[in-house]
Image (cartoon, rainbow, N blue to C red; front, side):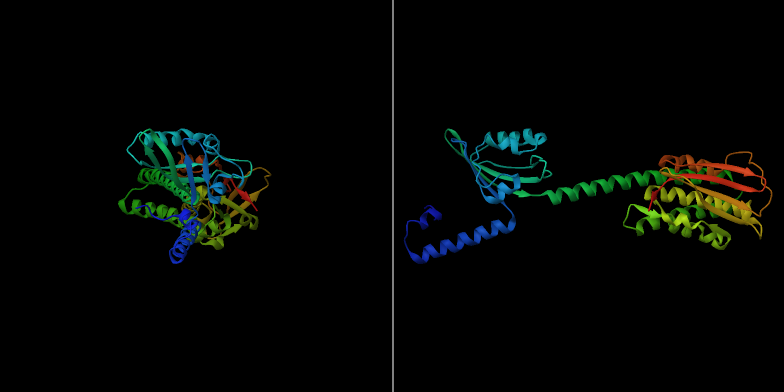
Length: 340
């Protein structure tokens, strides 16, 4: 026995049955509307398409525009048209009343970006082949955007993890060359790793893609008695990208450590000045100047800090020029910034 449908309501009959059917239809329409489903039907013999209002909205089609199957490919993103054709072809070659499902984008327009659509359908066949296709479309753009963001985050995490491993490998190799005992090796290595961890904390604590340089200076210089640093207030107006944070933190830690061991901070009256040099370009120049310490002479070999730059600062568009002047060590640190 055929189930009753909307056409039965027009024929009259039992009032109570008709009212029950009307209520069921109202509930079904409300559920479809609430779910945001676009409903479609394709008469294969005539080529006519029947779309509800939501389906027309999904594809950007005017409410009163007649539609045939010839119009449909032009409403699908050019890169996804073969996918749509293949999904229908496989279903048409399948068993009676074959089901198909696919995800594709709508055609981009000057007014709107493409939507991602989850399309599900059923092909109704008789002895001669496909007679009718019916189905629904659901907007899954938000889900696709979330998947793309998650994929981007995972790729970024993999990139950061690789860079972190390279830096730590350099830590171990270079620290081993500059110490005489296991205890010294442990102390120096742990200090460098702690600096790296502290700078990473700053990155994770902000939801933005950059960090105020003043915040980094405050964190990086805390172990070295900040009262002995004269810091240009203009530096606080600069922001550096999260990719630069760890590189800058490690460099500041290395320069400060050297100042304590060999430079200005090894003497009671010694001081370090951090000054912003004039520059109208995209990069900033931080001048590190030490005064009041012992007489300085150039080292006989490149130190860890110089090698560190090759791994970190230079990979992010920065560089440093070190000057071992007799009255005190100086460094010109160039790095990309975001000016406020």
